Image (cartoon, rainbow, N blue to C red):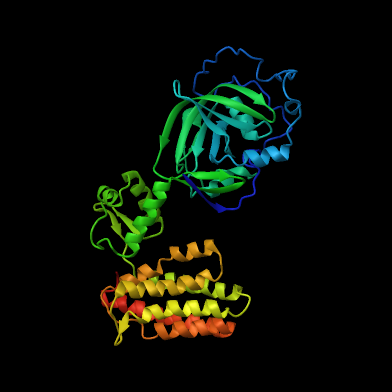
Length: 446
């Protein structure tokens, strides 16, 4: 499995993510109340007699056996513990409940499966969190597992708000508990028993309802939100995206999941994952009658991609400390000269070779920044794929491309920032014009 982190959210894994402050709740009230009061319209759950001290009474300290190393008798530094435990990646959920006619919710990562027979799970909530008090009194709650695109919901339910449910569509579950309609998965639960440990209370609950949809979960690792995906899903996405952007798949046909799974030698579930992401990018659509289909690429989509490339290249140029070294400039000139070998008498003799050379030229330019993340963003623009699609029915290259490449290199070698910006902008304009012509020749879309 691979984790890809997207956002820096410096939240405390232990408290900030699951200690909420619901509007109108008095945090000075006694939160350690009897939890046996059932939620409306449901019978009180059977609760086994505890074979331990009652949850509301502190567990007595046990003496450290004399034969243990002295190290175990010393308290662990809290900062060290927080840092180390933060290396354990978890999912992100919103715990919801309904009590006293009010909906309550909080973001939490301390959720775990407990038993299969009967189905049980546990959650941990800070004893000062108002939602903790509501769950304890109601005896029912829902665990709403968030998807990778729902970081905004994690933030919305993590901090104090007048109405945490504002703008959030909910269904109603057991005990009138709100269940987030768009959650990746949801489990409805009734509390069986609970126990206090330090600053938190652990609720042991029986799962009475569950549902899930396709998608990937939101992850939480070392104070940051991110994506959590199977390596095979990521690989299938990259491979399928390559086929889509380069128009290897027929524009007018449908995309059959089983056929693509066989072609990519991957499970159909990985192809469904890839389709979901490609739909989000606007590269694939879902037709009610035909199924998955390619979304045609037009001049607007092409312009956006090449303008994105220009913005990155201008940023790279501005970040460089001065002129390129002669060795770096010479290596770049060698790459630029490669494109010339695939053009004769104003016509492209090897389209694949020509496009590869053009891609290597711009790839080298982005690489001057020495920033792998920037390189990855650039490659996601898929400008070589747009060029391949627009030039697929033509053998005429841009009249300016090759000469402008050498002029750009010379400007970088001289460290002339004004000339670099002018040439990159001009080169982008000419490239977009060539793209427009190719797309027009293909009937307005490719």
